[in-house]
Length: 461
Image (tube, rainbow, N blue to C red; front, side, top):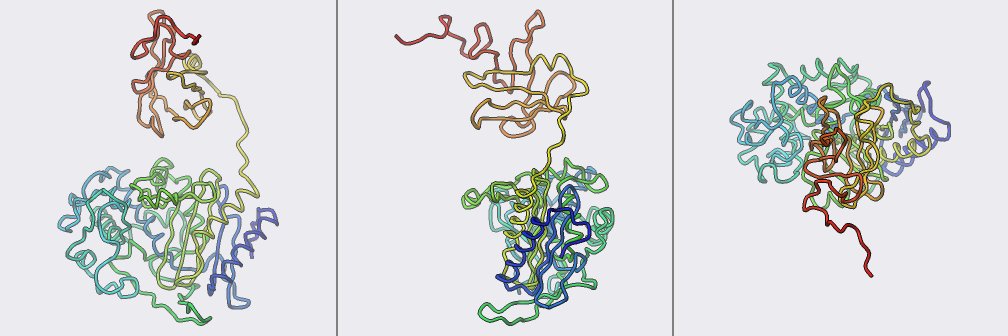
């Protein structure tokens, strides 16, 4: 099934439907629904179900588990952008007495705060939240398992602490803050902490027989900021578009880009698999492309949102079973299918409307030692410095308004770039964080550290 707003080629739509049909059949999911987002809005919805004639549409709610964490992270980043906290502030400054207060806000967002993965006591996802009424019940007597800030260790209690932080600084419940600050502005009216009809029921599928067992749908109480939410493919499609582009009513494009930036040290296995974590967002390399988003699971449900910002394609996959289909892999495949079958059209090239002659003078070829680089001006008002061959250091630079530039990424992130001029006003060289770039390799008369041999370049007889 697809929506009336079908904008994909029929062959692409059939490939998407085939992928989720295989996933639902092989994963033995009672139902599986999916959506694809392109150019900021949903262009395809699909569903497969074990109940003939009752395919769920894009408005049927499923539980989304840890995708809830990304919503909580959005609330925390709003507090940061309003100046109410700093990401490097310790939690103790705002929520004292937890026993985990030395962890910073950023470390909690990135799961590097050293906390345990789960809450002590009975399996919190399958028991009432009333069993854990206080933060101390969630954290236990020894909340820290690892040195703070040293390693990425996924922690559900860490996001309980972030929810408590939101409540402390907003003076209201996490649920109310979420509804007012995120759900309502983005139009996510089918997303909430409790199910509203129509919604799917959660099921466990027997691993060795095609029979089902209903899973309980517990209110998670204090653990809600880590995994409570219910949502739909339509709402999560809009949320994915927001995570890719930002929305000034909630968070700027710059802040959501910050959330998508790696913020956690990777384990050796993560380096091999291409996985890392940002600020409330998972970051993965799949099929040669970078995907950001989050997975989620609770007893009876699986969920994933995956976004390729470069391709401007995102996918949402939801299923109502405890285990079975690998929803992150399905979402990655949906993104790949669209990105490869219907690659993104580049914006038309247009000349710059204006250019500073002094900057135009700096464009072209430069050498750091014997490494050749090119400096270009880009249509977005930035400058780009990149090697002419190979995979060397490269970065974009933003103007500071005083003739200097600041690096935006990679090795040169935050580093100053400036043109150094001779007494007659001509450009002598570029200084990039103390590195000297000259028009010729080891140019005679240039202030190359260590000097240039006066006999110049030579052969060997």
